[in-house]
Image (tube, rainbow, N blue to C red):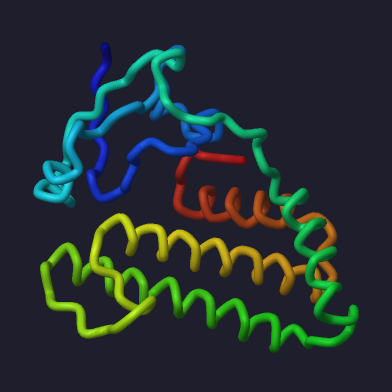
Length: 185
């Protein structure tokens, strides 16, 4: 069985994971990351520390594999859903950008709370604003990041983009080239 270094704070803990969309570094033949720790408390104690993760055969995983989601597929469905709330020209690019930034701000706030949980700083928020576990705070960061992406696609549509995958590919590759990195989409 292979070993792979990975940060404990990434929060991989089973559930629904689509490993087919992960980078090759997370796979070894038919093996994928299956388990970080057997006990959550041990993972919490070692947060942020580089640990060794076991790679297990796909057949042994307790995960549900889903059909990969493309950016363009999300773009189309996102636009269809947005039209239920807004006419085509309802919001300007500035308003879509503001909504996107609002979600990014919420992601940053959740990340701040995650940092506080890691540092064991007392949480003074009440009710659903209270994030007191690594798992809850990590989920909130991920959800707000997803909202940011959803609004970013609507902003792209508002400024006339029809193929966001191509725009993302061009920007990613340009940045890789600028810094001399080999990764390309």
